Image (cartoon, rainbow, N blue to C red; front, side, top):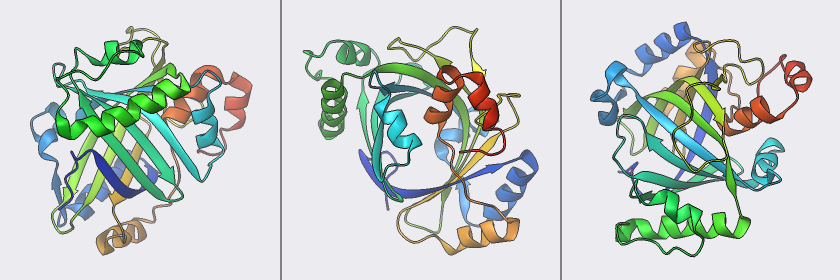
Length: 263
């Protein structure tokens, strides 16, 4: 079995932009194959809130690599969970080579991560577990070599399901996706200034977008194939980071011009 908390995960991710009615249909279709992730069972609404701080170079080279769909690209991000404010945060390097995602993820004590990123001379603290140090070192090596800084904080609710018939397969629904521009090393932003990322362009409202993700390691599970065919789902792409950068840093006329589609 693949442990989703491991420091390195290699998988594929298929994304779909769906409405609430379709989400209900997907839940019904996956019921024989999946159960709710145990982490979500203890939270209100059977979902948890994810806060992700995205880091980039001053010229947004990581954003542009993603926007131009370079074959080999990566993102640097710090992730925390609102329902666990005292839990460790995660340093993540999410690399994409073609259609394969390789994500390294290392836990850092919540009281240490800001000092660790803010001071390039600071060494990894003793509180980082031995099995997490490799992922943390990789994240720090990249962030320090590239001299990255924060650009956006993205927040959303995730409803996650795990397969009971595969070694590793997950289905997630991400909703209420919003972002805040920031230059601070912090997973908290002011109440004012949040912007909904509802369709990658016009930010019409908080509840109009659900991003469905199907995640698996090698071959697409047959039940996922049946799911997408029976509901007529069309695979697309949706980058939370890319969308947040465009929402805050791209001139409005260019965003409006994209309204005919989504990326």
